[in-house]
Amino acid sequence: MRLVLLGPPGSGKGTQGAKLAEALGVPRISTGDILRRNVAAGTELGRKAKAFMESGKLVPDELVIAMTAERLREPDAQKGFILDGFPRTIAQAEALSKLTPLDAVVNLFLEPEELVKRSAGRRVCPKCEAVYHLVSNPPRKAGVCDRCGTALVTRPDDREEVVRTRIETYERQAAPLIQYFKDRRLLREVYASGLIDEISLRVQEVLRA
Ligand code: AP5
View 1 (tube, rainbow, N blue to C red):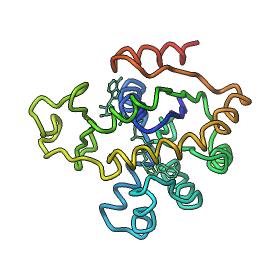
View 2: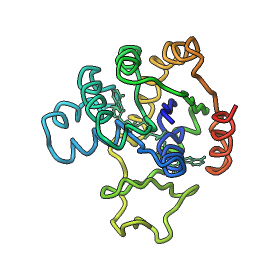
View 3: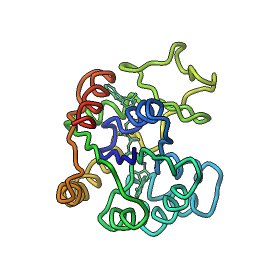
């Protein structure tokens, strides 16, 4: 399965992408996670991307396209993938179409105020990248990753003012992108409100249809 997950910040792309990747036995490729790893490691890409990410803006297309193309060439992506957070612009969608065909694009949609609440309560593991929420998806022991025992952190771009900029940035780009995939009959819409497992069932349903 070669799948793209679209959706605004906090809509649950990472959460649903991780579950789908496990169920389908394909890698989840999150451009946000790859960029954050580069920022943490201080690579040239990370140094170029950092200011864009911290202010809630998109990293320039040429950097993200080259990074994603390289990731898609790795052996584990040859049997399929879940792309989380890419493409975000028409230029990225066109570049992707030259790299690989797609089976479906799932668009997770949710009201802006709910998105802000989800991002405000998010805690992430800086080591294994597991994602939690203080209320809806807490770790077993407060502040500690269930999987690897590392202390959880707040993402620097989860401050409310940055989240609102990220939502605005997304909304500016989203309409043409959604139309692009609608025109190619790849788009499946999923309302992302409800329990995590309920959303998973909705995603499975639209993928079967
Ligand atoms: P990225 O990391 O991709 O962030 P995003 O798209 O803004 O999405 P998020 O990670 O914030 O949210 P999500 O939808 O994955 O939600 P999650 O599952 O975590 O990108 C970060 C930055 O990198 C961008 O701003 C940009 O600068 C740059 N970038 C990345 N890709 C790029 C690209 N292609 N081009 C240019 N720049 C790029 O869930 C959120 C929270 O809600 C969690 O706490 C979770 O536990 C909780 N939750 C999940 N589902 C539910 C539910 N059903 N009910 C209640 N809580 C839930």
